[in-house]
Image 1 (cartoon, rainbow over the protein chains, first blue to last red):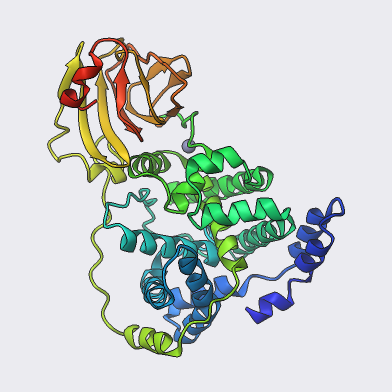
Image 2: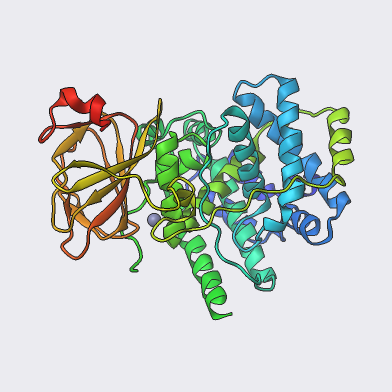
Length: 215
Length: 212
Ligand SMILES: [Zn+2]
C-alpha cells in the first residue's frame, strides 16, 4: 500500500483543492500517468504462481480494510476477524477466477468479501450471474489491464474529490447501509463517473466477448 | 436475440453488489445480468466502485494470530466447490436452480394465465408468470415495487414494449395492464417486495388463497 500512497500526490492535491473547479479533472489527469497498480500484479502472481509472498502483501493491504468494512456492519471485532480470515482464504482459493481484463484487485476482493458476509449472515440462496463461457482465456493484454487500473484510479480520485455528504452516501451504499430505495431517494451517486466507466467497461467487455466468439 | 432495451436501475445495481437487495430482486438482477452484456459491464463498474470505497476505509488492524492461522490453512486442500449452476432452456443459470428439472409447477390464475411461485418470504415473492399470446394479465396494482423480466415472448403496457431480457420496474403508483405479444406465450419472472393486489378479476379477499 505504501508504494501506492506515495504515488498518489494527484489525489491528495485534488482533494485539497476540491473547491476549485476542474480539480477532479486535474487529479485524474495526474493519475493517468500512474503505473500499473501493484495490487493487480500481486493478485495475478497469486493466481498464476500461487505466490505466498504476493498473497501476504495482499493480506496486509486488504485484511485491515476488510475488517473495517465488516465492523461497519456492527459485527464485533473478534467475529469480524473470523469473517476476514474466511474472505481472504476465499481470495486465495478463488484466485483462478480473477480476470484482470474485467476487474481490478480491489473490486474483485470487495465482491468476494461481500459474498462471504452475505453467506454468513443469511443462509439463503445467493443468486450469482451466469459466468461467461471462457474455455481458453485470451492472453493477458498489459495495455488493457493498465487501462483498467487507470480507470479504477480515476474512480478513486473522483471519490476523493466529491463533497463530503455525497462521499458518505457512496460509502453507505457500497457498505450495505442503504436500501435501494434510500439510494434512489438520495441520488448521491456520482452518476457521471459511473457512466463514463460503464462506457469503457462495455467496450472492454464487447472486445473480450468478440475474442471469445472468434476462438 | 436483440440486446435488452430496459435495464436494471443504477441504485438497484448498487444495492445488489453491496448484498443489500431483497432476495426476489437479487434473483431478477442476477438473471438479467446473465442475459445482458451492458448490465454485466455495469455490474463490474459498481464492483469497482465498491472496491474504491473499500480502499478508502481507515485500517482496522488485524491480529497476528489470525494472520498466522490463515497462512497455516493455505496448503490445506480446498473443499469441493459446488458446481456452478448451468442455464436450462429459457432459464439462465441463477434461475435454473429454482425451477424443477421437468418444468415449473404452474397454477392457473384465470383467463389462461398461469403462475408458479418460486420463492416467498418476508422480503416479498418471486414467481414465473405465463400469459397466453395476445392476452392481458388481469389488471393489477401493487403495494411495493415490482420487477418483471421477460424470459420468452414479449409484453407491452403503458411503459412500452418488453422483449426477452428486458426488465420493467413498476412502483406502487403504476396501475398497468400488460398485454402479451401475439407471436408466442409470454413467460416472465416477476418479483415484488409486497403481496400483489388485483383490482380486476379476483376479489382481494381471495388473495391469500391464491397467493398472489
Ligand atoms: Zn441490462
